[in-house]
Length: 394
Picture 1 (cartoon, rainbow, N blue to C red):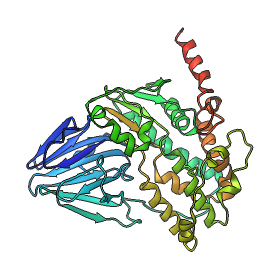
Picture 2 (picture 1 turned 180 degrees about the horizontal axis):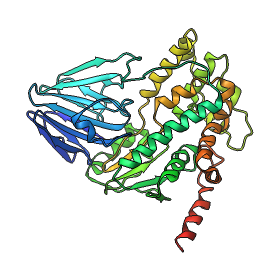
Picture 3 (picture 1 turned 180 degrees about the vertical axis):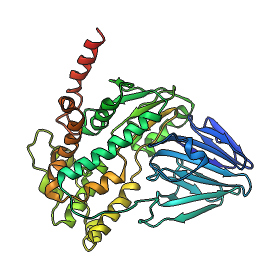
Picture 4 (picture 1 turned 30 degrees about the vertical axis):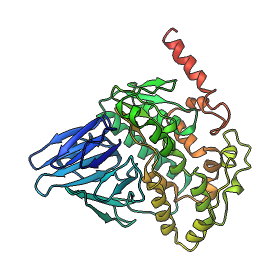
């Protein structure tokens, strides 16, 4: 989902949409819709309804999308995104605005952006408690089972709604980790209209051939990427670590507020232990720990949510839409109502996520790797590959 808004055609982009004296340069997969008073150029998906529904009645919602809405009367372009915008943008005053070429001028998720036809950028800063950013925070205590049921309902409703209105082929790639397996457990419990992908696949297109080196050097999460030139949806577990309390830095900061540290949780001998992953790097969180120690619980959760939505990791490439249902602050805020004792097994060994998988199909746990980003993470997937081959008579 790459774009650059400038005054001229940018040759490293394949598509060029002319709006009076500015040009919207994009990768593949963007759609143009012209209405009486506006032109909308858009890409991505909304969670609960078709993205085309936003064209007539725009409002901020969840999903993974970008709408560039041009007002024909006042000749301004608004950049509209999903509630937890998945990408950072940068601008060079008077030259361009986009999400590929990086500059010292960053535009974060809490920024609302409007551009005039001279490429002057108008930025509206939303406060952290604005309903279009983080939303309501509930600090009431909750039991583990209540939290599990609430998160299950969020994912069940969201993924069911998406699969009902989605018209593209769904491809499921399992990495061996808990997050892609978690999403897979919901998809397979809802529909049979998907295909498993037991390989790394990357078609080249115009945009990739003209930007591969820059992307790999500036966006490290694009070093592991699938891409098909034929339009499709790729199911992923993207942002699972961050939104399910397994990100080392953020979890350590959250634990410090409770008088604990992540190192107190990394000696577990559980089957699905995260210890090797946590101990791969040493993080210095002293500044952040000092910053949050005097916050109230509500302020702490706000602080954590602000960090989450500005941790931009992954968005669409070309005609392949990356499905990221775990990137949802409703889930994170619900889990933040628990205390460290209730979340301890999730932090050490994915137990909360495993319990969610088991609500859909406990047998899928056989395919979960006992390693976290270490060792042979795909070895247990061979059982699923063999089962699929047997069904197909191979």
